[in-house]
Length: 394
Ligand code: FEO
Image 1 (tube, rainbow, N blue to C red):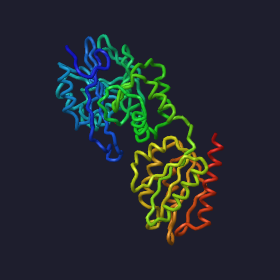
Image 2 (image 1 turned 45 degrees about the vertical axis):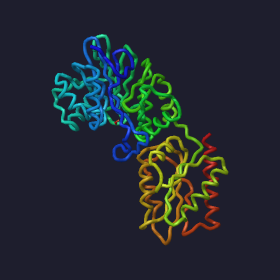
Image 3 (image 1 turned 120 degrees about the horizontal axis):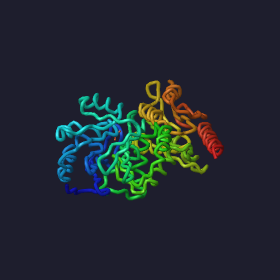
Image 4 (image 1 turned 30 degrees about the vertical axis):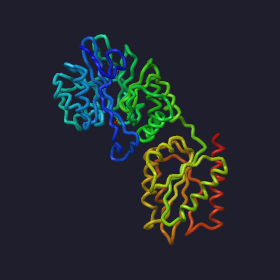
């Protein structure tokens, strides 16, 4: 068989799809740089395996790539993860290659049965550490749960030392380059991906990286974004993100209706800058939530700014606070600043929304109306307190 196309190594090829135009994932996550769904074809001496598939919207591109590769048959479809952007084309693959078996772990098989109605007899279920020979190439399956679903696993191609990591180490980045071009753009795409998808599982990621540390890995081939010929680039970035280290930073998501909270925020930003603290304000009516998520990866402190609306926090502040809680950043300190007109409660409401965050609440600055001298002084005390707390971290 002659194999053409985007070759990674002899007998190993990218056959996925690039989604240049996609701007939203899970109807939630902004994708300013698009994404890709990487599927890989491995031709062994005896068997042919497809590693993951593509989003169903890109099914035809996968089929075209397989045709261009002159594939006569596929023996195994390895499913590292049941989410549909990788598994959604499996039913179509099974129609095209009816003799193929879906190779995955017990939990993933169960999900695929539920989500895609794949029948029982189509599966070849493997255990953690089990291998599958393709002839002169061997696949090893390693369970890496919760990166980012409970069934996630990675596949290691033993002879070529390639790790097919699916979402793990991925980046939402559409690029015509098969291999990673290391630099800020790639790092940002990978960090955005980590922040939005992986950050809530920081502790388990650490365990999974340790689990993989015994493998000699020459290439990491994730299922989103480019392929890494230098695995240390992305592994080192992950080690930094999952570490307990935080930066001397304040992330400040805020919203203001009539300018009172905005004035507090602008004054507070200046105070932080004067004290040598990096500050990242996010006006929630104008900000990309993904940028906010990225900023949360290594900040020491979050300060939420909100006015009172209908006896509670502004809905945009509620949404941002909910996201902070859901993304579980490693931040150490939280505070709230804001203004109200006549009454209501938002401190209790926002504190409750942050119940999953293991951070210390420091002095809050909640004022009535437009800020006056004593309110500015309160903001100065808060800035001083943050500086003191950050210094204690070093
Ligand atoms: Fe790329 Fe969890 O799917």
